[in-house]
Amino acid sequence: MTNARRSLASNLAALALAVSVGAALPVAALAKNPMVGGAPMYASKTIVENAVNSKDHTTLVAAVKAAGLVETLSGPGPFTVFAPTNAAFAKLPAGTVETLVKPENKGTLTSILTYHVVPGTYTAKDLMAEVKKGNGEALLKTANGGQLLVTTKGKKVYVTDAKGGTATVTTANVMQSNGVIHVVNSVLTP
Image 1 (cartoon, one colour):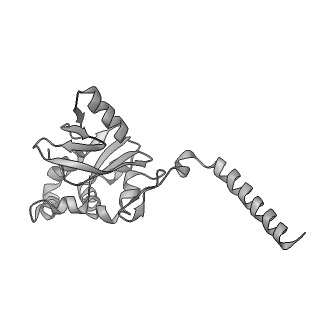
Image 2 (cartoon, rainbow, N blue to C red):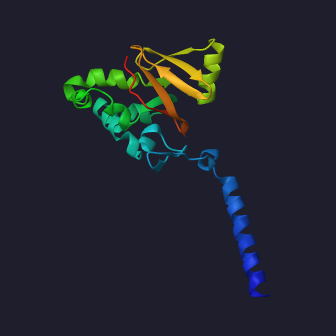
Image 3 (tube, rainbow, N blue to C red):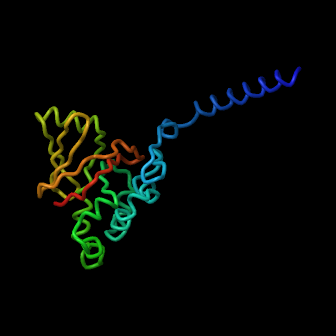
Protein backbone atom coordinates (compact mmCIF):
# COMPACT_ATOMS: atom_id res chain seq x y z
CA MET A 1 0.00 0.00 0.00
CA THR A 2 1.36 3.41 -0.92
CA ASN A 3 1.74 6.23 1.61
CA ALA A 4 -1.11 8.15 -0.05
CA ARG A 5 -3.47 5.15 0.28
CA ARG A 6 -2.43 4.55 3.91
CA SER A 7 -3.04 8.22 4.67
CA LEU A 8 -6.45 8.11 2.98
CA ALA A 9 -7.39 4.91 4.85
CA SER A 10 -6.23 6.46 8.13
CA ASN A 11 -8.25 9.65 7.49
CA LEU A 12 -11.36 7.64 6.61
CA ALA A 13 -11.00 5.57 9.79
CA ALA A 14 -10.65 8.75 11.86
CA LEU A 15 -13.72 10.23 10.17
CA ALA A 16 -15.75 7.09 10.84
CA LEU A 17 -14.70 7.15 14.51
CA ALA A 18 -15.59 10.83 14.82
CA VAL A 19 -19.02 10.24 13.28
CA SER A 20 -19.75 7.26 15.54
CA VAL A 21 -18.64 9.13 18.68
CA GLY A 22 -20.66 12.20 17.64
CA ALA A 23 -23.76 10.06 17.19
CA ALA A 24 -23.42 8.84 20.77
CA LEU A 25 -23.13 12.33 22.33
CA PRO A 26 -26.21 13.94 23.86
CA VAL A 27 -27.94 16.61 21.78
CA ALA A 28 -26.88 19.36 24.25
CA ALA A 29 -23.24 18.51 23.62
CA LEU A 30 -23.73 18.98 19.88
CA ALA A 31 -25.65 22.26 20.19
CA LYS A 32 -24.08 25.48 19.00
CA ASN A 33 -22.30 27.23 21.85
CA PRO A 34 -22.54 30.98 21.26
CA MET A 35 -19.81 33.28 22.53
CA VAL A 36 -20.85 35.76 25.23
CA GLY A 37 -18.29 38.00 26.87
CA GLY A 38 -15.46 36.20 25.10
CA ALA A 39 -16.43 32.75 26.40
CA PRO A 40 -18.45 29.91 24.89
CA MET A 41 -21.82 29.35 26.55
CA TYR A 42 -22.37 25.61 26.73
CA ALA A 43 -25.94 24.33 26.49
CA SER A 44 -24.92 21.49 28.83
CA LYS A 45 -24.07 23.91 31.69
CA THR A 46 -26.31 25.86 34.04
CA ILE A 47 -26.95 29.59 33.90
CA VAL A 48 -24.45 30.23 36.69
CA GLU A 49 -21.78 27.87 35.31
CA ASN A 50 -21.81 29.80 32.03
CA ALA A 51 -22.27 33.33 33.40
CA VAL A 52 -19.13 33.14 35.55
CA ASN A 53 -17.06 32.79 32.36
CA SER A 54 -18.51 35.83 30.58
CA LYS A 55 -16.29 38.92 30.87
CA ASP A 56 -19.38 41.00 30.04
CA HIS A 57 -21.30 39.75 33.10
CA THR A 58 -18.88 40.09 36.03
CA THR A 59 -21.10 42.69 37.73
CA LEU A 60 -24.17 40.46 37.34
CA VAL A 61 -22.30 37.46 38.74
CA ALA A 62 -21.06 39.49 41.72
CA ALA A 63 -24.62 40.68 42.36
CA VAL A 64 -26.03 37.15 42.11
CA LYS A 65 -23.44 36.00 44.66
CA ALA A 66 -24.17 38.95 46.99
CA ALA A 67 -27.91 38.20 46.80
CA GLY A 68 -27.38 34.51 47.57
CA LEU A 69 -29.00 33.40 44.31
CA VAL A 70 -26.21 31.12 43.01
CA GLU A 71 -27.89 27.94 44.26
CA THR A 72 -31.30 28.97 42.91
CA LEU A 73 -30.00 29.82 39.42
CA SER A 74 -27.95 26.62 39.42
CA GLY A 75 -31.12 24.61 40.12
CA PRO A 76 -33.26 22.76 37.61
CA GLY A 77 -35.43 25.73 36.62
CA PRO A 78 -36.25 26.21 33.89
CA PHE A 79 -35.58 29.94 33.87
CA THR A 80 -35.52 32.69 31.29
CA VAL A 81 -32.97 35.28 32.38
CA PHE A 82 -32.67 38.76 30.90
CA ALA A 83 -28.99 39.23 31.75
CA PRO A 84 -27.69 42.83 31.89
CA THR A 85 -24.11 43.37 30.82
CA ASN A 86 -21.47 45.27 32.78
CA ALA A 87 -22.16 48.23 30.46
CA ALA A 88 -25.86 48.05 31.42
CA PHE A 89 -24.95 48.25 35.12
CA ALA A 90 -22.58 51.14 34.35
CA LYS A 91 -25.58 53.17 33.08
CA LEU A 92 -26.99 53.24 36.62
CA PRO A 93 -26.28 56.29 38.76
CA ALA A 94 -22.78 56.30 40.28
CA GLY A 95 -22.53 54.18 43.43
CA THR A 96 -25.77 52.23 42.82
CA VAL A 97 -24.15 48.82 42.34
CA GLU A 98 -21.75 49.33 45.27
CA THR A 99 -24.71 50.24 47.49
CA LEU A 100 -26.87 47.32 46.33
CA VAL A 101 -24.25 44.64 47.02
CA LYS A 102 -23.91 45.68 50.66
CA PRO A 103 -25.34 43.04 53.05
CA GLU A 104 -27.95 45.46 54.42
CA ASN A 105 -29.40 45.88 50.90
CA LYS A 106 -29.66 42.16 50.09
CA GLY A 107 -33.49 42.29 49.93
CA THR A 108 -33.52 45.11 47.38
CA LEU A 109 -30.78 43.47 45.34
CA THR A 110 -32.61 40.14 45.36
CA SER A 111 -35.81 41.87 44.22
CA ILE A 112 -34.02 43.57 41.32
CA LEU A 113 -32.23 40.40 40.21
CA THR A 114 -35.30 38.17 40.41
CA TYR A 115 -37.15 40.79 38.37
CA HIS A 116 -34.83 39.73 35.49
CA VAL A 117 -35.90 36.08 35.84
CA VAL A 118 -39.06 34.58 34.35
CA PRO A 119 -40.03 31.01 35.27
CA GLY A 120 -40.04 28.77 32.21
CA THR A 121 -38.05 28.80 29.00
CA TYR A 122 -38.92 31.54 26.51
CA THR A 123 -36.77 31.62 23.39
CA ALA A 124 -36.89 34.69 21.15
CA LYS A 125 -39.31 32.79 18.92
CA ASP A 126 -41.54 32.10 21.95
CA LEU A 127 -41.40 35.76 22.99
CA MET A 128 -42.33 36.89 19.49
CA ALA A 129 -45.23 34.43 19.43
CA GLU A 130 -46.48 35.77 22.79
CA VAL A 131 -46.26 39.34 21.46
CA LYS A 132 -48.17 38.36 18.33
CA LYS A 133 -50.82 36.59 20.41
CA GLY A 134 -51.10 39.71 22.60
CA ASN A 135 -51.62 42.03 19.59
CA GLY A 136 -48.23 43.69 19.86
CA GLU A 137 -47.24 43.11 23.47
CA ALA A 138 -46.87 40.37 26.05
CA LEU A 139 -46.73 40.53 29.83
CA LEU A 140 -44.41 38.10 31.58
CA LYS A 141 -44.62 37.44 35.31
CA THR A 142 -41.18 37.56 36.89
CA ALA A 143 -39.79 35.48 39.74
CA ASN A 144 -40.21 38.45 42.11
CA GLY A 145 -43.92 38.71 41.24
CA GLY A 146 -43.63 41.77 39.01
CA GLN A 147 -44.31 42.02 35.30
CA LEU A 148 -42.19 42.76 32.25
CA LEU A 149 -43.70 44.07 29.02
CA VAL A 150 -42.24 42.48 25.90
CA THR A 151 -42.59 44.08 22.48
CA THR A 152 -40.92 43.50 19.15
CA LYS A 153 -39.96 45.54 16.13
CA GLY A 154 -38.82 43.49 13.18
CA LYS A 155 -36.60 40.80 14.66
CA LYS A 156 -35.65 42.88 17.73
CA VAL A 157 -37.08 42.07 21.15
CA TYR A 158 -37.56 44.83 23.74
CA VAL A 159 -38.31 44.41 27.44
CA THR A 160 -39.89 47.27 29.40
CA ASP A 161 -39.88 47.40 33.18
CA ALA A 162 -42.44 48.73 35.67
CA LYS A 163 -40.82 52.19 35.63
CA GLY A 164 -40.91 52.50 31.84
CA GLY A 165 -37.23 51.71 31.24
CA THR A 166 -36.60 49.62 28.14
CA ALA A 167 -33.85 47.10 27.47
CA THR A 168 -33.02 45.65 24.07
CA VAL A 169 -32.16 41.97 23.74
CA THR A 170 -28.70 42.13 22.17
CA THR A 171 -27.95 38.40 22.18
CA ALA A 172 -30.90 36.02 22.22
CA ASN A 173 -31.30 32.31 22.82
CA VAL A 174 -28.19 31.48 24.80
CA MET A 175 -29.46 28.04 25.75
CA GLN A 176 -28.54 26.57 29.14
CA SER A 177 -29.22 23.20 30.76
CA ASN A 178 -31.74 24.92 33.07
CA GLY A 179 -33.21 27.54 30.75
CA VAL A 180 -32.20 30.35 28.44
CA ILE A 181 -30.35 33.65 28.74
CA HIS A 182 -31.14 36.74 26.69
CA VAL A 183 -28.40 39.36 27.05
CA VAL A 184 -29.86 42.86 27.54
CA ASN A 185 -28.32 46.32 27.39
CA SER A 186 -30.08 47.87 30.42
CA VAL A 187 -30.90 46.94 33.99
CA LEU A 188 -34.64 46.46 34.55
CA THR A 189 -36.15 47.86 37.74
CA PRO A 190 -39.32 46.70 39.48
